[in-house]
Structures are given as structure tokens and as C-alpha cells.
Length: 222
Image (tube, rainbow, N blue to C red; front, side):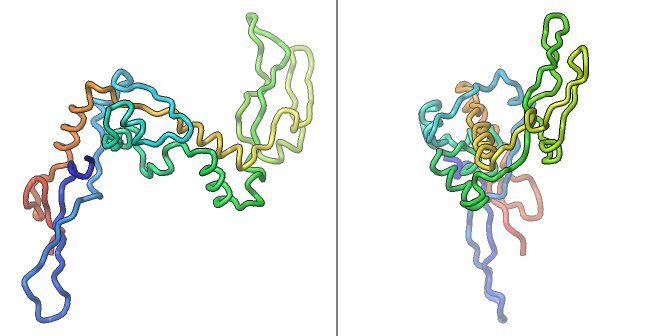
């Protein structure tokens, strides 16, 4: 369905050797015709529904379940601004493992990717709430991990080993975390589907130019 909404482009296939004959042309879909969603129309949370993607589910399956037709998968791709849908959607565990091994090598799949802090409470409170001495999830270097960390507990300075307030994150754990981020996607609500399709068709039409043939066809020039 997506391809039928794209405009066409006319390629000049005339020979490059002399003598020249009359130009021949071939018509193809203009895959480089990019469309950006009108933020004034589709930029509000009220137009979208959050959706959690389960293990092994593909984009076309989500489209079939929500819109009733797998061919509407392109709406999900565009509204979530996917560049490469194959890797923008969460991978199943087996595929993810292969990607990690290909990316880092089998021997380094579980090697250290980076270090992150662990949330550390100072032991003191303010208005009944624990005071956090070190926020968790911050990226730090190996020097931090190997050195010491000092914080104030409300009474005195406390010094602890860096490896007690930070941890090594493996390549595998990092990629799993990044993959999990992809599970939450946004689906354009059903009543807006046809409106979106119409806007897409309108905004991908060609305007007047030297290569203009029609609203849905232009040439590449001579």
C-alpha cells in the first residue's frame, strides 16, 4: 500500500554513445521522496496510543492487529520515524544475540562496554525523603570504577571503593537495554488513519519545476 502512494520519477535511459537516438525512459517509484509529519496535526500525545511490542512480533503483525491490515505497517514506520525498520523494531533474543556477536565478536560479546553508577543513598534524609549521594545509571569511566568515591552522610565524609557504587556493563547487557527501549512504540489512533494517508499523499505530490511532468511524475532531467 505504501508504494502505491509514492509519486513516480522518470529516468532517462538514452545511450551514451554517438550517434544519439531518441531518449527512452523508464518509470520508477521515487523512494527518495521523504515526508515529514505535520507536527501541528500529529504532534500531540492525544493523537497516539502507546503500544508495547512483545517478543518476536513484527511491524506488519502490529499493523494487522491494530489497523486490521498488515499493509498499514508503513504508517507505523513513518509515525515512529524509523530509518531502518529491520533494526528499529525490537529484535527477538536469538536475532539480537547474532547481532551482538557480529558487532563485537563472539569473544567480546560479554566484554565490558562501559561503566555505570549505582544509586547510592547518603543515609541522611530531608523532609522525610532519602538524600541521594550518587544518582544511578550515569556513565563513568574505568578510572572512576577503580578509584574511590567520597560523599557526605549528614554527619561525616564517607569514602568507598568506586566498584561498590558503579558496575561494569557488558556489551550484551548494553544491547539488551537498547533493544528494550524499542519495545514502546506509538500508534496513530485509528480515527486519524485516513486523514494521515490523505495528508501523506498530498505532501508527496510534486510542485512546479523544470522537471515537472505531473503532480505524480517528474523527470530526472537530461
